[in-house]
Image (cartoon, rainbow, N blue to C red; front, side, top):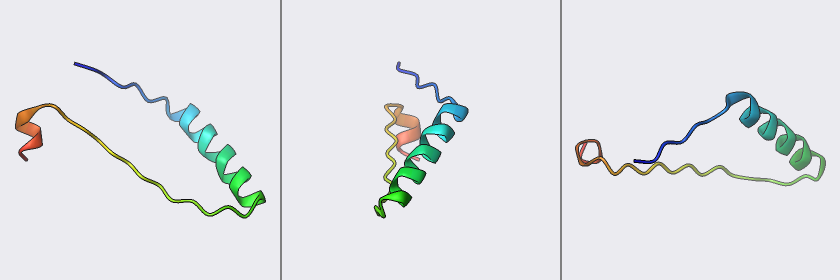
Length: 45
């Protein structure tokens, strides 16, 4: 089974950097998230 570790401070820093960059260059963006789960019990819920 695979695990994903998220570091909130690093994600927040990256988001703020991109927010500033996009705003300065008047770039519009959208967000997409996707979560996959191979657990049959959870995927049926």
